[in-house]
Length: 354
Image (cartoon, rainbow, N blue to C red):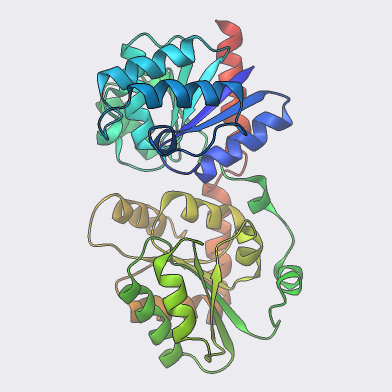
């Protein structure tokens, strides 16, 4: 079995989890980032597989405008996949779903599936045309059926996350590994994609609300513009640690008393799979608000209306042991840790039937 895991920007955690699972099963896996292959200034393709080199050469040749929904681009992508030995394509974000829905209309032959991380089914383009959709919770299924997707095409397995988030390392061992003091209250703040002012407000509020027995780890991507600014501002403040987001996120989660994050689908689901008390920073509107409401309504997280409220909610989770334990129990009921395995098993089963 040969898979293509497709994304628009960098491979999501869903993509990484599916690649991990496919390789463990001995399947061949290709990964393709549409944004990268559309770039006229793409780096040398020598280190990539034959399929990816072919895709880069073909798609870059036809790419004229910065719009991957252009028919010429869709036709070239469809031809490239049809000429390969791929058996199935799995899309891991809304944009790649749009692209592959058009590709299906243009004659794409391999099976094509989508992982749907949130409630934004309106962004799926021509959704009924793909072969299957993998969702996080049953409530999303009804939205999709109303969009014209057959119930037999919708599978509620949860979001695929890397196996590392299932780790039973435990708080003591995780802190020992990361050299974090065992006697501190530790908060993990996933700040990627936030404005400098908003991240700064969280840090300032934490300093004003807490005493010296806490640590706030602020995790930001390596290419974040605000990471260096925050590092300089809090260079002499022992309670604030600005660090680069790494593949050790699961260990940081294991070592934390509470996680603070925007209500992003994968980060929220990873925290739930890891069994870490969670505080969602509330957005004004949109799909993130729906995710925050979904989690809070089922006691999987607490919602915070402001920076000050976020810190107080995080402190509640460290002070009220029963509240934190109840949240962890609820998370274990709703967050399926084996989603990647079930997704791959379903695709293989459908492929064998065909």
